[in-house]
Image (cartoon, rainbow, N blue to C red):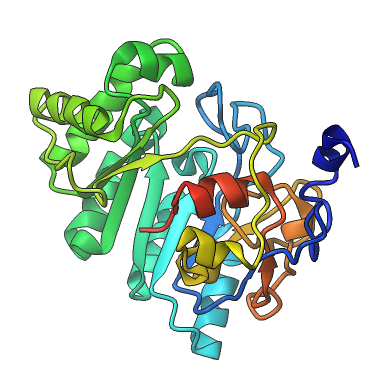
Length: 312
């Protein structure tokens, strides 16, 4: 088979790779983190948004408090032992039920991680955030997207006039003692040491209390490109690459989405694959407790080879 023909067969069969080898799968070891995509609408239209969020993209509609509550009830009723709830988007703070959802998750004892760009949608919720912080402290965490430590490269990704408002929101969170982390990107090919030194200077210059050399506080995510040439992951790869399948996101997490036009939300295997119906595992957490074939370029590049994970 010519190389071009072989390449066209990659990531198509959930059981076999294009070369006929057994595709790697990941077993749900334990549902440690349940993510909710609160909707794909966002105040920004980033150049390389993995979920294509924009101010007009409502492909994933807003989740309601009642819809989230059903999944939290299922966790309680079935004793899943889930410890963390994650909110992502789009921009979660654009969802009109966001604060109610946060309050509900925290009140039930979950750790809560919210991904945000820290701009106006979040800043308009400052009073509510201060109230949640007063009542729940470090049980609430926020991870802010700072794509690069320079305004020029951050705005190359996020768009003009996005750096200063982000810094304003990040600084406010830091001054008020919120449990914070930052998500950066590696798309500009600097080595990790240089990136961390650059972020360190930025944080010190603006009085932001984040240790840039702590990989939990500054997460540097590998890039995702559906068109990039990446190898398929076979069952043999775990030993060859010295990677443990239990370390993959889909071994410990799932994500709830609601597609436009659907009557009910459904559960995706992965936070990175919100649109791919091959990774739609059903409407309940019980249905979603099934093995996940690593049948997408993101599985290979971001998770297995890149070591990326969205969970806290």
